[in-house]
Image (cartoon, rainbow, N blue to C red; front, side, top):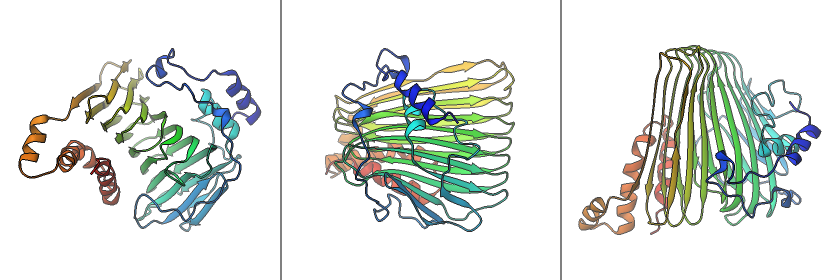
Length: 389
């Protein structure tokens, strides 16, 4: 990994992204100064409630004050992350302003390493919680599923209070080795005044499987980058995204499906609902390398607008260098169907109950992709709860 000093130099030399840059064309960071946030006076939040009520094999909290591991399964490394870890920084380095800031400034991270052939019946759960007003939290998560391992990891970003003003900067590296299966759930539920920037990067090897769920509900503004590298024949990744933005929220998802080996499969499906003056950006790219024949890749983004002033931008993309592949994409943007709304209200439902019913129906197909029932039900409830009474 790049030294902290070199990462700090890179961070200082790189400008704050602005809308003149293609990747940031629809995400304006005016008024945001990452150097204006400090992390003094942090307090532990291990007693704060989890978003998901679920029995877990391991439980940890990352905050400005440190890492608290409350429970860890025997034989599994579920512990504070050391700077000496060999894989640290190998796929999330310091390539842009925010990853460089993380590489220079992170103090607290978690290592999750499940040995070869081990299967965990209950999930591992990590909460990443900012606690200090006008504070910055830099976190790292390094996950290794050794050959043949099978387990679920749930990651939740949360705030100590709903009004907390802060800056969250996260880096996540996932290594799914040969024949392993990782179910990875990442839920972002930060306070409405917290800026959130995260880079999640996974490498999936031969005959391995990554099943990823991304839920977006909180934060003020920022960008989440999701990249999957399918490095070995038979590698499979599926990413299911569900988000809801309201008020003046702005969510930005930047996804990348990298097919580097033949006979690989990826399936990215993101759905979101927006109301008030909220805005969302989704940018997706499928890249198929020259030797990655027999690739099967799909990406889609669907948005439901619940108000006239809400706005969404969908930007799918393909970069295909092989000639024997199947790559498809789709993007739609629609208002609430007034006929559906009228039909539901004509049968005695209030407008809010009718909207909740329509929202649930809109999200049902992506919710059905989620294998873990508690995650599926919690996401559905969180989406419906955003409709005002």
